[in-house]
Each structure stands twice: as C-alpha cells, then as structure tokens.
Image (cartoon, rainbow over all chains, first blue to last red; front, top):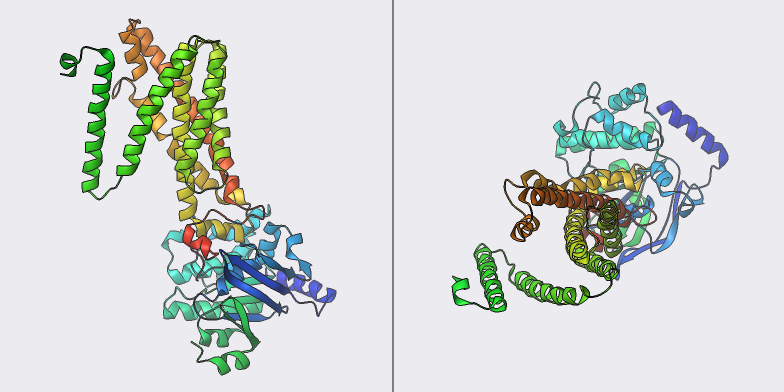
Length: 246
Length: 274
C-alpha cells in the first residue's frame, strides 16, 4: 500500500514539481445570504499539512466540504493538480480527495468491510495484505473481523482514517478528527494522523479549533474568520502571533 | 336511535355524518389533553372530506348518464388530486409532485388497466370508478408513506450518506438501504390488510355486495380480489416512488441536498463540526 502510494507520488513528481496539489481560486459559498466561505484563495503544495483554524462558526468545515465537492461553491473553483475540479467526475474527485469527519460514521459490518468500501466503488477488491497493513498502521491488527458496533470512539476514528487511506487519496481532508475524543484517544489519533500522512506522503488539510494541535501537526496554518481567509503562513506567523485571538 | 328520529334518508345521512364528526372531534380533544395538537388538521380534513365526497357523489350522479370514457377522465383527475395530496404530506422535498404523479399513475393505472382488460373489473362506470378510486386512494397513501419515510431516513442518516459519497460511492448507492426501508415500511398497511382480511375486518366492498344481495361466497372472493389489487397497486406505486425520489435527494454533482433545515442553512450536515 505504502509502496504503491510512493510509486504514484514519484511519477507525479516528475510531471511538475511546482504545480500545487490543491488550489482554491476565489472560492465562495453563500447560503441564504450568509457568506459561509468568502473569496478564499490558497495554494497547498504536495506533501504539505495545512491547518485550518478559526473560531466556531467561522466557516472552516464549510470550506473543507467545498474541497471534495460535498457542497457546491457559489463562485470560484478548486484546482486539483492544476485541473479544474469541475472537469473531474465527483466520484473520482472524492476518491482522490479523501475526507475524515469529526464523527466517525462507520458502515454496519466489520472493520474489513469498512476498509473495502472505497475500493469496491471503483470495482476493486482490497487485497487482504493491504487490509492487514492498514490495520497494523492504526494499531488494530487482527481485528479485521470485529464488528464496528463494538469499537470505542478512538478506535472508530482510527478505522475511519484507515478507510480513507484505503482509497489511495492524493489529498486528505480532516474535519476536527480528534475533537469528539477523550484526551488519551485524542493523543493516539493525532500521533497516528502524523504517522500516516508522513508515511504516505499525503497532502493534508486539517480543520482544528485547537491551536496547540494545529501547531503540533501542521507545516502551515490558515486562519478563517467569518468565512474569509484572515491570515496564512507558518505556525509561528499565524498561531504564535495571534494565539490570543479567541 | 337516529333511525327512530329521522325517517327521511337524506336527513338520516346528515345526522349520521354529524354523529361521526362529533366522535372524531372527541378523539381530537382526547389527543389535545396529551399535548398532541391535531385540531386544525382534523377539522380541515373533516370539512374537506364531507364537501369532497358530496361533490363527487353529485358529479358521479351526472356522469352515470354520460359516455363510458368519462370514467377514464374521472380516474385521471383522481390521480392528479392524489398526487397533489401526497405532495403536501411529503413536505419540502424537490420533485415530489412529479414523483407522486408518475408513481400513482403507473401503480394504480397499470393495475386498473390490466384488471379491466382481464375482466376482473367491470367496464361499467358504476364498477370501474369506485374500484379504481379505491386503488388510487390506497396508492396515494402508500406513496405518502414512502416519501415521508424516505425523507426521515435520509435526514437522520446524512452523516453516513455523505461518508459514502466522500469515499466515491454513487449517490444512488448511498441511499439504497433507505430506499429499501421506505419501500418495506410503506407496504406494511397493505400487507396487514391482506393478512387480517375477514378475521379483523370485513371491508366495505364485501359489506355492500352482501347488502345488495350478492352471493356471500362470491362477495368474499371479490373482496379478496379487491384487496389483492390494492396490494399490487400499492406495491408498484411504492417501488416506483422510492426509485424516483432518490434522484431528487441529490444535485447533479452528487451532493446530498435533502438535509435537515438547520444543516442546509449552514451549508453542512450533522457530520460537520460547525
């Protein structure tokens, strides 16, 4: 799995080193006169981890939902590896831009069933060794046939993460993946996210209201307020300067 | 008691209607004591019911003297009215009138046409219109149940549906379990009617045939025929309705548009954190 992803990334590197993996171009979404996302333009380079921070209701999740087209922008667009995402079929786009939500919604069945879900949509059967590898990565080795109904919150979130990775995405979006977890589980999942993102050389956008977490995980931070991009830069530039903005 | 007071049939009918209305209002008051407020809906439904049935009875009286094709016209009008009623029940879902019209027309229309062709339903207006209306009415109820259940299932499983979409699943596939649940749930009344036929209830059609002097066994068999037709019309309607409505839950870019009001206005679903 990791080998496969790395090979894919090497091929892509040869094509264009400077092209951003993901780029939003004046992206906006207005619903009932409310500007949920307001004219956001950002570039995310391959392998980068960008944290999206901001107060509650600032439009962080709304912004994230536009990136894999779960919601439609009212203006602007997104470029994935230089291609306008409206030219890519929504199903293919969502396979390439994975999403891990705050609440891990697992499909009824076993952990393995959940991991197989994404590849099955493309008519592929996830090999047993890949399932074993993924479960090993998330610390749930030998639990492939466990019913997801019996998982703890932390375990469920780890399965949710592995399920997104099983789809071999190029970009991984994470919407407050640890906010519903207790402290212990939060630390576990956070460490796992870093490990998986780095091992698989993924481009990652993570929404977080926890500035300390954003500082620990991200290479760059963008701050959103009232749907607008307030500031973007290094952790030092954004978080340490503005750490008392709440 | 009423028969002793009223000798004129029309007056007796009015008195009987008044008695049943009072009973329905008492039930409504009982519900009100339990903080269930159905006052407005019940009164409107009762008023509409009595006005509509008297109007239809009068029109029916006129049409009986007209050519046979008028029964087709009457049934078509009933289908449109049924679709409109069902649409109101479904709430704010896009495309529900269209879905209801197609489903009820195809479900009840196919059964009426086929059974009339087979000779199960007599082509005489006095037979075709009442039986046809019975099928349309039941198809309407089934359609309302299907749409209502589908809506509530989708709204309570937004997170799971969007998780499926986010993993690259086809929109239709993400709602497939809820289409199935809606279909099954909407057919429960029709199945129960079949199962309890003759044991729990003796339906109006059989009672009417007995009163008009038909052979009791034939009346019983024909009642089974009627209930079977209702089941077929309802089943077909539910199937078409549940398959058609799933397309209206998504945008062309396979985004879930059928979401609880609060989630829609903030542009996200329950899975969102904001």
